[in-house]
Amino acid sequence: MSTASPLVNDRFLRALLRQPVDYTPLWIMRQAGRYLPEYRATRSKAGDFMSLCRSAELACEVTLQPLERFDLDAAILFSDILTVPDAMGLGLSFAAGEGPVFAHPLRSRAAIEKLPIIDPNLELGYVMNAVRTIRHALQGRVPLIGFSGSPWTLATYMVEGGSTKEFAHIKGLMYSDPSSAHLLLDKLSRAVTDYLNAQVQSGAQALMIFDTWGGVLSPDKYREFSLRYMAQIVDGLIREHDGRRVPVIVFTKGGGAWAQDIAAIGADAMGVDWTSDLTAVRQQVGHLVALQGNLDPSVLYAPEPVIEQEVARVLAAFGHGNGHVFNLGHGIHQHVDPDRVRYLVDAVHRLSRPYHAAHS
Ligand code: CP3
Image (cartoon, rainbow, N blue to C red; front, top):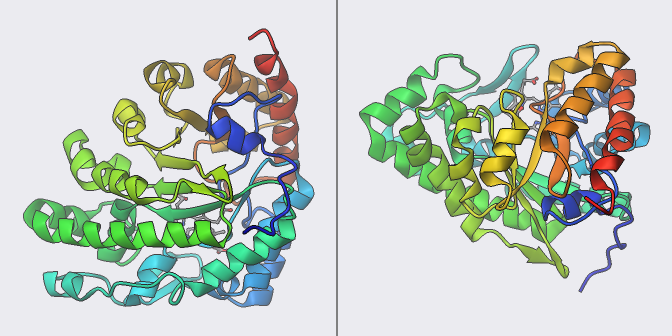
């Protein structure tokens, strides 16, 4: 039984299912974040990043901040992909200016074997509280996106113990002890499936899997160590809830060359970064999935005429018809001026209408 308000703006869900819309919907990866002064204020009130994630009220507050300013077509749960390894006991902290750090990185088969099976409604109950609180506060204005990291991307952070440019430990494990790598990825796939399903049951209306580091793999290793596990997750997800389809977006940064493989795993949509041409990707996969992307985030450092031109270029690259959600090709940079974001949002809505005219 549902007590939720009906959706006022469902363009985002419709576009993900390749249904007609009157203009191209958009949201922005990391739309709640440090480029907004009100985010920085709430974050300092919370003390640190994880306290912000653990408070349903504050997580809800920052989720809504970008929607108060801009005419965005979706909200995304304020949390982080690294809450899952934290719940598995790795001890996550965010050192100021240094990114995430795990107190107990995974460096042995024994440690991987000992990783606990988590119950997302207990260890990650604070995320579910945030989802319920945000859904209530949204009152059906726009859909709420739930998310997780991909098993490969989570494993990268867990084995490295934080951010890396070299991937020495995780790739070392993959090449020298593939069976332990697979054991870890399989455990993570189960945890991520349960976690995403719990988000749907708490009120998430679409799901996104962030595979930030899949693109550092060779093609065969990508299929074996990343894509295969995302396929396993997609197979296990709740796809309909409260009488509506729950679309799933899979995003491998740097995965443009593997679009056909990605489109075949059964997700509704695929995220595309700015290094790929949307025309080419659509030609390869357009009958299978919707596409989300793919403006270079750095375009937002440029003045308005350049933003206008680049938005027009992305819209034209996708072309006429259904199945496009506009987004950046990766998260928004922290030094972007929020006024440029307002210009972007309005430009996408204005310039996209002709692509959805009835005759197209
Ligand atoms: O998109 C949103 O607005 C929702 C919230 C969200 C955050 N992280 C908040 C956050 C989402 C969807 C993420 C996903 C995430 N987290 C990814 C996948 C997407 C991507 O960017 O590739 C990854 C790899 C992470 C891991 C992570 N979290 C890193 C490496 C860092 C530190 C680097 C950085 O950008 O500061 C974080 C911290 C983080 N997660 C911040 C935010 C707003 C900044 C924390 C702060 O306030 O200082």
